[in-house]
Length: 65
Image (cartoon, rainbow, N blue to C red; front, side, top):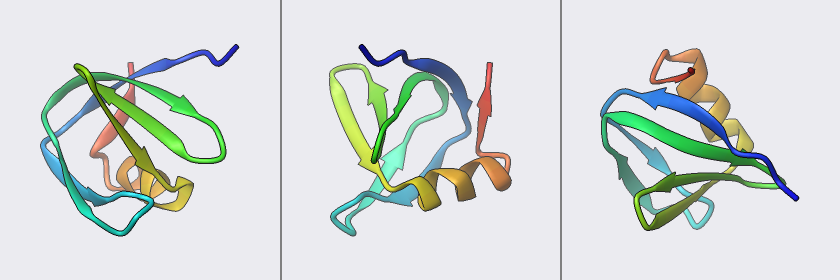
């Protein structure tokens, strides 16, 4: 079982694991960190690589609530 952690996101863009630019809206979204990082936005599931997600955190775009 994977536990999701809530993160507060600022409006931003990020490449998903396929190399496609995705918009992440401002708000609090569930995040599951597996081999890829899954960001659940409503019914949409974005798969990011760990480096891209770590960069969002380093830039202050994603903060754990």
